[in-house]
Amino acid sequence: MKPSRARSLASSSDQAPGTRPNATAASLDLVLTSLAATESLGRAIGCALTGGDVLALIGALGAGKTAMVRGIAAGLSAPPDAVSSPTFVLVHEYRGRLPLIHIDLYRLHTDAELESIGLSDYFTDRTVVAIEWADRFPAMLPEDRLEVRLTHRSPATRTVRLAAKGPQSRSLLTRIDQARRPGKRPPSSRKKTTTGTRKAPAR
Ligand SMILES: Nc1ncnc2c1ncn2[C@@H]1O[C@H](COP(=O)(O)OP(=O)(O)O)[C@@H](O)[C@H]1O
Ligand SMILES: [Mg+2]
Image (cartoon, rainbow, N blue to C red; front, side, top):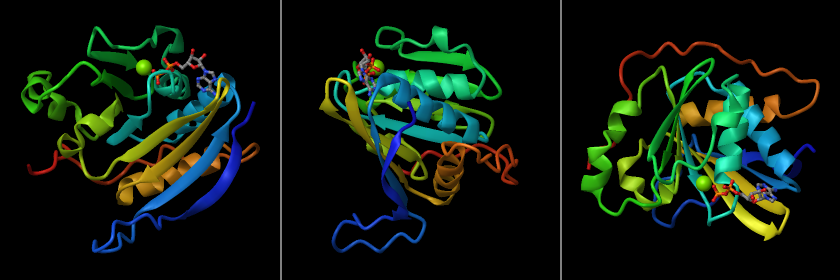
């Protein structure tokens, strides 16, 4: 089942008071009425990725973060059956069109623990990093990331907000919006011209 659209791609208006409006912020709200709808949106995300993307997955236990990553893996042509919650193994890597690094921060408590898994080393232009429980360590994430916030609505329904936090994630969001619509092909796989390693934020 295709995700239904709750609100169009729009400039975000949820800027905190007193902060400078971010001209590159944008968000997309959708209702996901089944597991298949969540995986289908994940596939659209996977198809739209070009490398150097950071997906910050946020939501309660059972919200569908891992299900979303399964769809993303499928969209990258990585074997989706390999995707499971990496709660015990903190980091999984799946090999598809781009390397997909799947990280679960549920059991981590301190910045030092996070540093010990070498998080910032994964943020390169050639990888995609999907992080479950990303809201636990926001200061450790690159500023330009796509937040994927899942919320329970009913046993089978979730809402999701995709929120772009910078220019790269904003263009990713535009490609996702195109990829998830039937009959439309994403302007995908345009290689970005930037090179080098994406910087983690100064802390
Ligand atoms: N619309 C939906 N989207 C995602 N998962 C759903 C949905 N409806 C029911 N589910 C169920 O919710 C659970 C989500 O599990 P999981 O993806 O592991 O969550 P998380 O990683 O957020 O803890 C699965 O058992 C899945 O079958
Ligand atoms: Mg999970």
